[in-house]
Length: 464
Length: 106
Image (cartoon, rainbow over the protein chains, first blue to last red):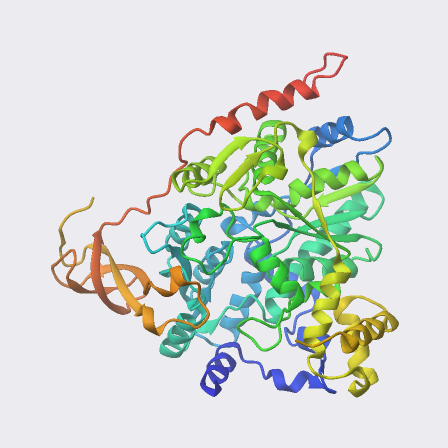
């Protein structure tokens, strides 16, 4: 354990102990501030490498469609932040730009990241620009040697940018393998959970808030953000606040994959979404500090106003709709928030504005035809049916009409209570000081009085 | 190009066993716990080897990695798949929906 902490500290360069105080509090803003860059500096670093300032597109045809489905007077304008326009094709470039700039500044010779997602290609692309070596580890294969097509594509992209890629079989030991390589190489760990990785996304939120105001004369009413590890929600929400959009509703959305085990060899290839889903989204909400660094800079519960899920079939449907009605061919994983936004826009008034916070690039392996062909080969049934017939791993129901597209609402208070029970641990309410309670209230975006009440309830509940 | 052996300097794929089934992380589901944790790495073959034999490669970073040779000039293997009938009708269905009573096109 001590060795693990030492490896991480050397690879990340942060002493997390310095932020702890009280019984369980830590100074979150001070941790974020260690990133050492204000928003203008981040923007400058990103511009240097062609990252950011991505187009904000109005989806007029999808808005028209939403208005046909919605009651009179409803149907908000839908905007899309085209993050696929970044080098390497996703918003992850914003995180990578900062992390790699930092690695270079501190004199590391190379960088390593463990990720099966777009972050790998983003890190490899930025490392290429900055002249650093790059190793990417991915979880790709099941025991039969079948690679998830989307992840194979990302591995290919990493190699295209000059990275050395380690493609692993299913298992949480990806992190252990990362440690081995870090120890062997002394490279920088481009973690998704250090302050830089979060601060890099603030520009995204800032751009959305500022441009919507300029073009539409009002702040966005809701920004819909795909949620997995929490960095996307955290960074975007902070950026919106920086742009003065403190009334904007922050909505997180994940693809519903409940019932599938993320570490199961059998289940691994029976899902069509490798990130942005409940397998990450739910655990990370209730316990962000489950990652490769002691305190996760990504803390979505501090910012979320609403959390919803959508089914795989609905996202595939909306991916098709985006291409066929708006002439934008984008990767399905990046359209998770589009599916939710399409529903939310119908709930909102026609003069309101809903923003889809991202897109990702598409191509072989990522495309819906690639994913659904693969799913079929693995015995997953695909049919046109109501989304309620979706069974993760067994059935993908493609909606028969746009009316069938909906979202499932999650009770965020349930999640908050779960978070508090874990954060407070065995400490009875009476043992917590004011600083601890204030900290917890900020962590879950609830009033201190409510937090106290929830902790009291937890104290009184039987312990098993 | 899946051949039985690779020449020195050829781009190949090697497989490395990182953890045997008994060495894996605790609390894994049975199906995963029963299998080894393996990694695949690409690199330039050091000397001639046949598929299935131990071989060392030099990666694009100039690092040496040894494993079992599995493929020569490995193709990533992903594609656009085949047409998916359940998606094919969506475009025209939606365009029809958007054509209003005024007959205006999308």
